Image 1 (cartoon, rainbow, N blue to C red):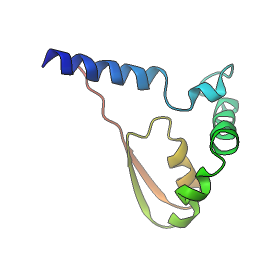
Image 2 (cartoon, rainbow, N blue to C red):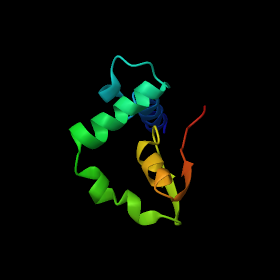
Image 3 (spheres, rainbow, N blue to C red):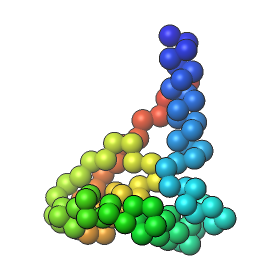
Length: 95
């Protein structure tokens, strides 16, 4: 059981310290508007220009969305600015 607990702790540490997409804004101060603008530029234009269409962010206007494990909230934000009512839930193991 301790091994499993340690694995979970390491996974939580990894995704807390280095959330998906953060590397795309290397050199920008985390939490600033410039940081998030750079994350979006990297994610939706450079890294995965197909993502906005595939995810269908504009198709959920007026719908409720729950994202579990939302990371930095990059995708959830796209749903929100396109009219979705969004909620998020992230699991953290505190020991």
